[in-house]
Image (cartoon, rainbow, N blue to C red; front, side, top):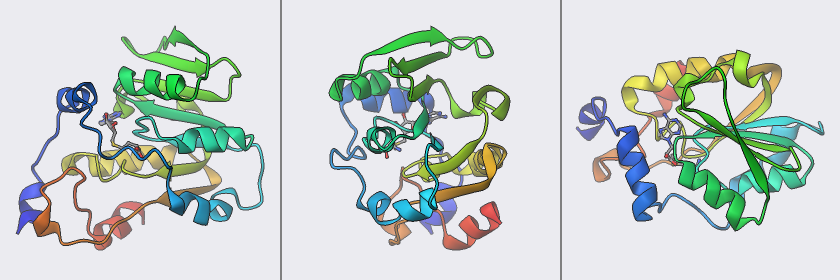
Length: 196
Ligand code: SAH
């Protein structure tokens, strides 16, 4: 089946950058995700002023939502265009600085300081650079990761989580034979084995 053949599929960073350049970004949702509203209490668990991580963030509007609620948001995305569009579309002033630990990487930070977006590959990051997080919003991230990199991705995410951290993973059930991806099909059994 196609689940088998997806295992070896690779979408390169170049291809992602091209999608952004061409405006081929059907995954972006202007309205934000209803499931974040629905499960916000699970993510926050009564806590305030959290550090929330957005892996493979694109220009997700949920980053603005959480920042407006008083949390501090950190995202990572290889497309600089995505990050610049994010700040522009929300009329947020920001400044740019290099990330000394990663050659070629940049950090774009809102002037108010509560949104920091790293422009680099997620695999260049570590908890020594980012610190740890109280919560993770994973929508379109695990499913965008190349199947061969899933274990590496999840292991990294684990190292970024504080003890009482919550991880919201948006999942969709569908017939994997109908889509070649991305997003890639991640069977429920694999989610369980990856996250334990
Ligand atoms: N989470 C976002 C975007 C999902 S699409 C949303 O909800 O809208 C996946 C995004 O991951 C794309 O914007 C792509 O450019 C980015 N991406 C792909 N590989 C990456 C990597 N290795 N490191 C960082 N970002 C990556």
